[in-house]
Image 1 (cartoon, rainbow, N blue to C red):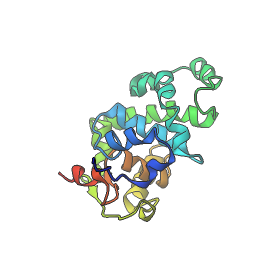
Image 2 (cartoon, rainbow, N blue to C red; image 1 turned 90 degrees about the vertical axis):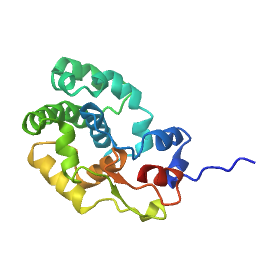
Image 3 (spheres, helix red, strand yellow; image 1 turned 90 degrees about the horizontal axis):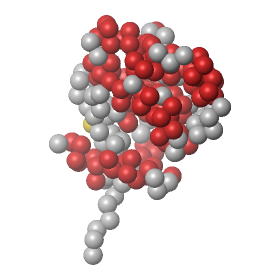
Image 4 (cartoon, helix red, strand yellow; image 1 turned 135 degrees about the vertical axis):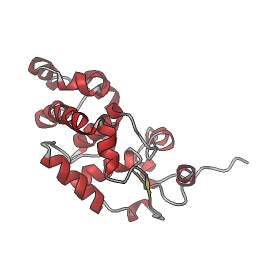
Length: 191
């Protein structure tokens, strides 16, 4: 009899979250464009469920040049107007505009720090913080690090980067390992 893997509780929201949990969530991301994607999608999540955004992730990737920071920063108003009528994503003008706006800010950070990756990972001293939460509901919505990241991003002009969004981003991009200690991924990410 094959033993069933123990996963974090959030996968119970939908079966499509299982591969995301198993293959992406919490794995350290060092690529600038992937980090920008995760931060951008987190901003789209503001006020709604992650599952709603996740189901539209491929549409966002298609419409926003796979989150290539330079290409997104160069997007014109006419392109954004077309996107506003695309039912495959969440059609919120402020959220859509924030992706392009934040891409321009990310380019400024890249110029200053050498990469978006170096800037982002500096908040955790370039190593994953491993927490030891037994249950997913024990995980806080923010931390002192996400507070600092949010404050600095906002100071630099970023939008939709509150502390809750930043903490979620940190979880997704592997800056923190918030898999439950009983989850099979927790130990894998410790090594």
